[in-house]
Amino acid sequence: MVVVAVLAVLGVGGLAVYRAVGGGALPTAGGGSQSEQLLGAEEIEELLEGRSQALKSGDEDAYLEPFSGKARETQKKLFNNLRKIPFARAEYSVLSQSGSGDDNYGTGATVSLDVAFVHQIQNVDVRPVSEWYHWVIKRESKSSEPRITKVGPSGNAYGSSSYVYYPAPWDLYEDMHVVRQEHSITVSDKKHAADTDRFAPYIEKAAQDDISLWKSSGPAETEVPSGFFTVLEPDRKTYSTLYSSDAEEWEAGQSLPMPTFDAEFSGTEKDLEYGGARIKMDSSGNHFTHATRWQLGVEGLAHHEFAHALVQPLEAAYGGFGSDGASTEWWVVEGFAEYMELRFDSERASWSIQGIKEFDGSLPGGPGVLESEVSSQYALGYTAVRFIAEKGGEKAALQFVADHYRKPGELDQQLQEATGMGEGEFEAAWAGYVRSIS
Image 1 (cartoon, rainbow, N blue to C red):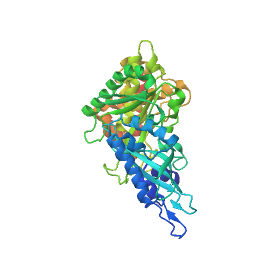
Image 2: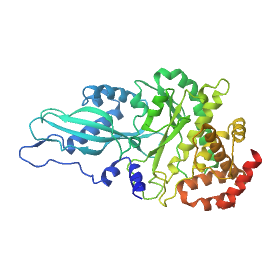
Image 3: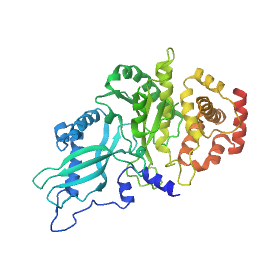
Image 4: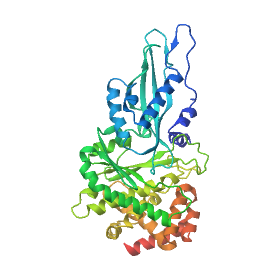
C-alpha cells in the first residue's frame, strides 16, 4: 500500500506534490541579526513569472536576462524550440527549495529549486502537464540582480528520474524541426527535417483516422484529445533518452502518459489523473524503412501509439493501480491499440493472427521477452478486442475500453455489458474464436 501511495503522489507532478510532503509557503529568513535575506519568496516568484511572461510574449532578451554562463546557452536553445509549439499554457512553478536565501557571511546567497515547466499543448493535452527542472540561483548582494547559474533535470522524483519527464525534444535538439498539421504535431532534430516532412502526412492520416473513429463510435461523454504530439528519432540511444523512459529492445514506439499538474484526485471528471501523452517513435525501424510498405508501416505504428494517447486521459489507474486496487488489464490496453492499428491494415491483421504460437487459451497478461512471444501476445490482445467488436459491435467495444480504463476493477461487469458474458465465459468463448481463425 505504501508503494501505491507513493506512485499516486508521483503522478501529481506539481504543487500538490510539494504540499503533500510538507511544503507550502517557501522558507523565509531565519531572523538572525547577522543574516540578510537576498532570495526570498518574492524574488523567486519574480524570476519564475518573468520567464513565463517572456516565453508567452516571445521576448527572448527578457527571457534570457537572468541566466548566466552555460545555462544561458542552453536556455537560448530551449526558448527558440519552445516558441515553435502552440501552447495553450506555458509557465514555471516552484516544486521545492533547498537553501534559505540568506546571506549569512557576506558572500551572497544561493538556493536550489526544483521547478515545474507547466504546459498544455493546444488540442493535445486535455489538462496541463509538467516537466521537472533543477535551477541554481545566486545573488551577490541587495544591489545586484539574481542570476540563474545552472539548469538541468530535477535529480529524481521520489527515487526515479522517469517521473521528471526530462529531456523533452525541446531540451535535446539544437534546432527542433516542427510539422504542424490539423490533428498532429510531429517534431525531430532539424537535421532529419526531410525525413520528418516525408513521414508527417502518414502520421497525420493515422491521427485523423483514430480521432474520427472515436468520434463516430466511441462514448460521447469521454474527454479525449483532438491531436497528438510525436517525436521522430532515428538514433536508438537518443530515442531511449527521451523523457527518461525505459525502452524495450523490441519496441518501435512508445506512448508516455503525462500526469495532470496539481490534480486534486477527487475522482470527478474535472480532476483527470492524466492530462495527455507524449509519443516517441524510432524512425530508423522497419515501420519507416520497409521498401514497399513503409507508408502503411508509419500509419500503423501511429495508429497504435495514438490509440494509447487517445484514451490516456480516461485512465484512473495511477502507477498501474486504480482507487480500488485493481490494475488495467494488459490485454485491454494493448489489444485496443492493436485493434486500432490493424483495423486499417487487413493484410497485416491476417499476418498477425497467423503468427499466434503455443496458445494455451488464456488471455495475455504481458508481452513476454522474445520477439516471437511479443508478436504472439500482441496478436492475442488484438483478437480479444476484435472478438468483443464482433459480438457486440464496434461501439460496444470502444465503450468497453473506456469503461475499463476508468474502472479497472469491474472487468466482469464490463464484459457482461459488452458481450453478454462474464469474465470466465468470455475467456472460454474467445479461446475457441482464436482457434477457429488462427
